[in-house]
Image 1: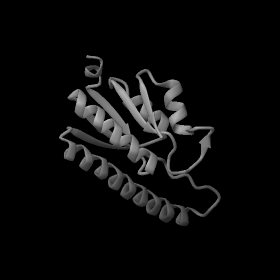
Image 2: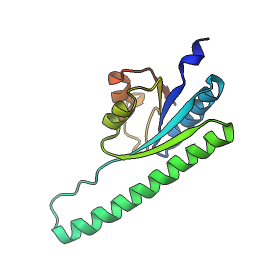
Image 3: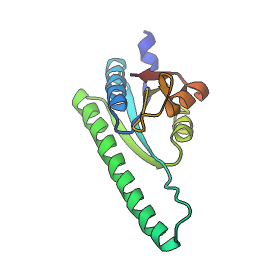
Image 4: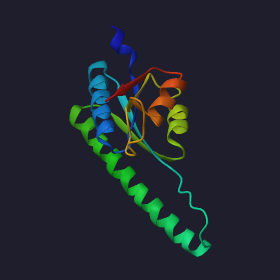
Length: 146
C-alpha cells in the first residue's frame, strides 16, 4: 500500500490557523499509515539594531521568552491532537530560520506537512515564504495544507 511509506512525518507549526489545519492532516495521515509525527516549531532569532545595549538585552530576553511561550503552546496543541488520535508524537522547538531548520530536520523523514501561510500573513501568491522555500528545496515530499 502506498500510504505505508509515510512512517515518519514532520509537522511544522507556528500556531497559525493554517498550520493547525496542516497538523490535523498530518496526524490523520500518520494514523492511517501507522506512522509517527515530529512536531516542529522554529523560534526565529530576535534581531534589533540601532538602540542602546541595555535596552537591547531587556528587549531580546522578553521577546525570546514570548516566542518560546508561543512555541510551547503551539507544539503542546499539536501533541494533544496526536495523542487523542493515538499517534506517537515528539516535540521539537529549535531556534533558527524556519525554512532552513525545517529542511535540515526533514532529512530522514518520509513527509513534511506545512500550512500554506504562517502567522505573518505575508504571502507570495498562494504560498507563504517559508512554505515556498520548503517546497522548492526539500529532499522529501511536502504536503502544503491551506
